[in-house]
Image (tube, rainbow, N blue to C red; front, side):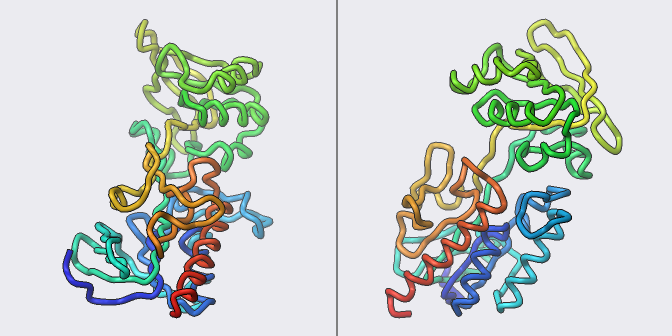
Amino acid sequence: MGEPQEHISCLIIGSGPAGYTAAIYAARADLKPVMYQGMQPGGQLTETTDVDNFPGYPEGVSGPEMMIQLQKQAERFDTDVRSGWATKVDFSGDKHLVELDNGKHVVSADTVIISTGASAKWLGLESEIRLRDIGGGVSACAVCDGFFYRNQTVAIVGAGDTAAEEATYLAKLCEKVHMFVRRDEMRASKAMQHRVMNTDNIEVHFNTETVEVLGEEGVTGVRMINNVTKEEGQLDITGFFVAIGHKPNTDIFKGWLDLDEQGYIINQAGTSKTNIEGVFVSGDAADKVYRQAVTAAGTGCMAALDAERYLAAKGH
């Protein structure tokens, strides 16, 4: 990594609800934060059409509009919001070095707040991605979007604890939930499997893979195949949920920060602190449990407060 061309008091990497909340708090504490927005400015919420569960929006708000408002709020307190993404870090010294845009720029920072988030895994079907991108009834978050499918029939793909949990959540709202499991058994814990099997309106389809999500403007059905018998089938549904996991965007921190087996950054309990002094984490890069905009925002606040206290203790 080259020599830093700029020194920053508080560097924020990533621009979802966690990053922008951290920026608002850091800016108001006069830390003069600089934010690099990352590969997906605004984070996962830019893929969400309607956000109805964030406090303060009685009529709801679109994901992209909410992120624009958060950016404006951060900029009102003089956060320096920049396009670009971090491609390498060096946390070996007192000053934390971060390379941006594959070496085009290198900065040093007294504190770093990581808000790089996580990305939902998708099946990769053309129909799935097309309908997802137009807000046509494809979602990776039942807790976020299940409300829109009350008393309707939906399908969910997945076999782990998250899929089982989301299926049972949807079952409380929806008339019928079809669950597609690729193998002849679920990966979920026995307790979660029992919960699914004991829920009357969940039908589990084992050895089943999705061929196509049907619909032009919105989901109208799904075509699937039994990967053992090769028998194809079709179901009428209005919502298609994918729960095959998330991948935290933390690859560049490997070797520097403590990560769990899935790649989520491990923070000290009750704080945003990582194993490196002066480096803090917020949002979905560390959270595989809740993954909500409001919890991400809360941890962004924590990270900024922790950074402010760290700098004060250092006499900055």
